[in-house]
Structure formats: structure tokens, C-alpha cells
Amino acid sequence: MSSYIDLKFINEMSTRLQQFKRKSEYLYNFRCPYCGDSKKNKTKARAYFYRVKNDMFFKCHNCGEGHNLANVIKHIDQKLHDRYLLERYKSSAPSTQKPKAAFDFKPAFDSKPQKDYLSQLTKVSVLEENHPVRQYVTDRKIPEKHFDNLYLCDKFMEFVNRVKPKTFPYIKEDHPRLIIPFFDLDGKFFAFQGRAFGDEQPKYLTIKLKDSKQKIYGLERVNLQEHINIVEGPIDSLFVKNCLAMGGADMYFDRIPAKNITYIFDNEPRNKEIVNRMYDVIDKNYNLVIWPDHIQSKDVNDMVMSGMKIDEVNNLISTNTFAGLEALTKLTNYKKC
Figure 1 (cartoon, rainbow, N blue to C red):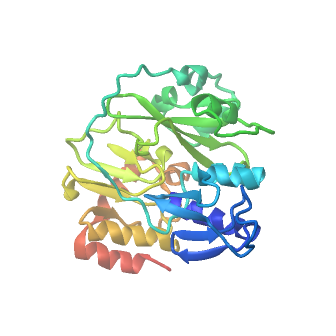
Figure 2 (figure 1 turned 30 degrees about the vertical axis):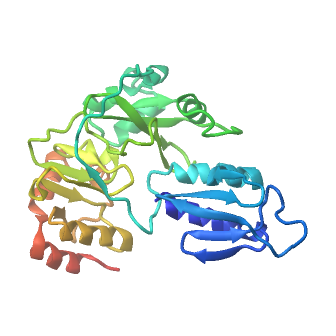
Figure 3 (figure 1 turned 135 degrees about the vertical axis):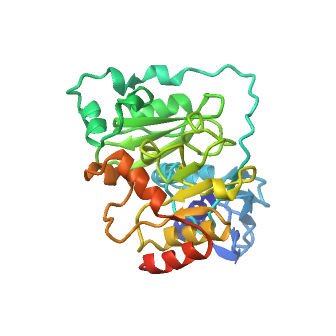
């Protein structure tokens, strides 16, 4: 995911970098934007973008400057930098090579005391019945038992900067968002998704307190001894039995038998990326939900909002779960791309 975004922004900057050349898939050469490169030979280019793991970095072999990509973008164009940060924290960014998170459910030991960031926000459960945000959550048919773990953040960017300083270096117009917190197996808060109420982009923005943590929602609620369902979005997971949400990246499990896991993707038969991910799930011997033709809703939440009861949705899931050759046959008939 991060490599896709980095390459996208390198491409946008390329016209501003002198002698810019692509050497290989993850190696680019150009004249240094810091020192200007060789003063004697205007064709010499000794600056490079190169990849380490999934991230792109900068190094100049003339002046010795070295930075991550974000700092280089900031040096060249502040507005482009702001947009880059938003893209990097998107929860649903497209990917040319999807991250395959092999999650083993081992609790991570952390001796540092955790700051209580969520106490700075307002729980949806304490809002007045006629409050617009409580009404928004109610209109989405989210069960009231979850209201305690949904929050109103009046100034989203300001809150993000308190949690993760300098994420938004310049705040011109802040806005409110619904905050959906992520907890690990020990119940520790490690990330949150901010959902926009208006036209703010991106619509969903996920922030991790620790980059090493995988964006998996629902760990504190899931029963690992029972069959596990996995959906795409956190809100959808609130309607499905024993459910996790992927949080924007594919995830697979080393220590749980494939037969004990069912993947539930959004109902988008024309979305080539989703269809390819469905094929990948089948190939790894997991169970897969393939929605029947008469279902027009895009996702689980839309199904509930359209009038289906939660029990009906869960029954629909169980009766349309397939694996192996049967899943392949069903998927071939389902896809429209």
C-alpha cells in the first residue's frame, strides 16, 4: 500500500526534478533538489529515490543529504506534502501489491503507560438523543450496545496532532469526525479510524499510534476459539457474529485453521481489485461469502439500513459461504469484471 502511494507522488514530482530518470521499478535518479548537484557538469545526477521494505527514501551522493520521501515532498511543495500525508493514512488506499498480514495473535508486551487519549473525546452514548452525531449513528442502525465505543471528535486534525504530532503541519479548516477506536487483544488502544460526516476526503482515515501494529479492528471482542468472520470495514463488523475488520489491508492467519475463518467482502462484483482478493482467499483455502444476485446493497451496513434484520444478515452470510471448487464456480458466475 505505502509503495503504491510513494510511487504515485514520486511521479507527480518528477517534472520538478532535473534529469529525472527511472532506473528500475523502485530506483529513480535525478539532480539533487537540496544542493543542486554538480556545479561543473549540469548533466550529472547523483540523487536517488530507493526502496527499503515498503517505503521510498532519498539519498544524494553529492551533498550527503538523506531523508524519507515525506521530507523531500515537503521541501519541494508544502501542499503536495499535506496531500501525501492524507493519502498515506487512508484506510482504503489501492495497492499494486497488497500487504499480507500474517497475524499470530501473540500479545505484545509494552511497559510504557498508555495515555488516555479517548477521554479527550465525547462518547456517542452520552450525547442527547437529538444530537446530530447520535442521530447519524442511530440512522446507520448501529446497535446501541456499541455506542460506548464510538466517539465524537469536534476537531479531528487537532486531535490527530495530539496523538501523533506533526501529522497535519498546517491546519486551515478543521472538521468533526466519528472516531472508531481499535484495541488489541489486551484491550489497549492502538489506532483509530475517523469517519467524515460531510464531503471531507478521504472519507475514512485510520491513524496508528504505533506503526508496528497491524490495523485489525475488533480484537478485544473476538473469540479465537470460535469461527471468525472477517469484513472490510469496522462498522460492518458491528453487525456480524464474532467478527474482525481488515482496516484497509488484507490479513491472513498462521495459527488458525483456514476452515475456521470466513472472509466477507463488499458486494462489488465489478470491482476487479475485490474480485482478485476473493480469488486469493479461495486459493489459501479460506471460506468466502459470495453474495446472491438479488442482494443489491454494497455492504453489510447498507443491508441493515435497507431493512434487513441483523439475524437475517448473519443467516444470509452462513447460507452463502463457500470454499474450494464450489467457491471458484460461484465466484466465476458472480464477478462482472
